[in-house]
Length: 60
Image 1: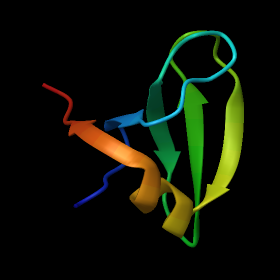
Image 2 (image 1 turned 120 degrees about the vertical axis):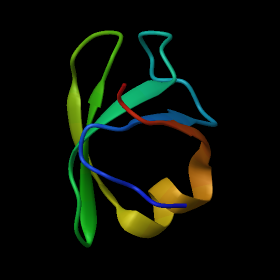
Image 3 (image 1 turned 135 degrees about the vertical axis):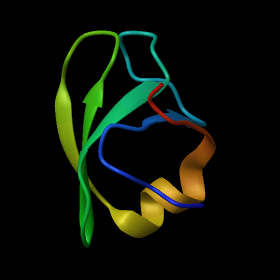
């Protein structure tokens, strides 16, 4: 999968707020993701994002 800044990633597990969609804000060895439900931001290692991704939506 090809990840780009601005893409929306749907992960297998839901965030405690109930959303499972995350906006990619930074790419590198770690990804910075922003929850589209509550706005919480996290840094997560690339292998975890690749493993747990179900779907990628590109911006229009």
